[in-house]
Length: 260
Image 1: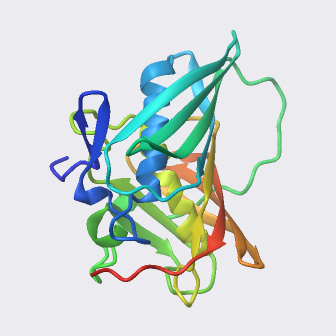
Image 2 (image 1 turned 30 degrees about the vertical axis):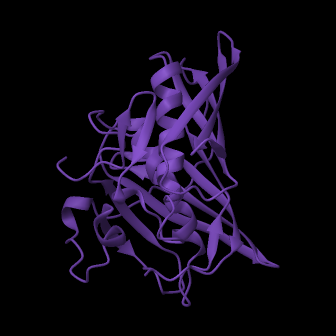
């Protein structure tokens, strides 16, 4: 990866680069880098090969500016089968978000058959031409291969996406971080319609039964609902070998600030 990373390291803090800017305010961070950095720090400090991060929930209650960031973590439970870790995203000395991650011990599946959704039978990323309309991942924030539907349309949407830069300079993306830094995409993908995106998500929850084994992450919108300016959105997520979990969010009606 040769593109500018989202963060550089300065002592114990992370310094956002211009690539980390979000769509709502030209002087604020993108939600995806908040989720990604919280997940990355939980994994870096508390992960183990015997455990999978089965759930990551991130609350985003303040739109952070481009100040340096500190992430603190706390072990809530360190059991033999279940571990729970809390983390806090502190921007410019002010708390802007928090996360809880539940890590479950890997074992073996029990016997028996359980109902599953139909197989996600779609083209692989390599079989889909890159977009030529300049709308690939907010001008290059990520790579995208659209499968069905698109922003500005009404109907179920499916797409592949892949990261094109490091989250933190000098640290390779792990499979879990690839999911964490992309998970915020569930909100615009599920909540955008023919008038564009007018909901800003206040949280993200990711469930994983396994980590991805390829660089491409597939998103499929499975639900959207909105009443009184409050929306929910849900997506199934995949890699090129099949389903890996789901991502969901809550969101509030919001209009974007104009960029100068």
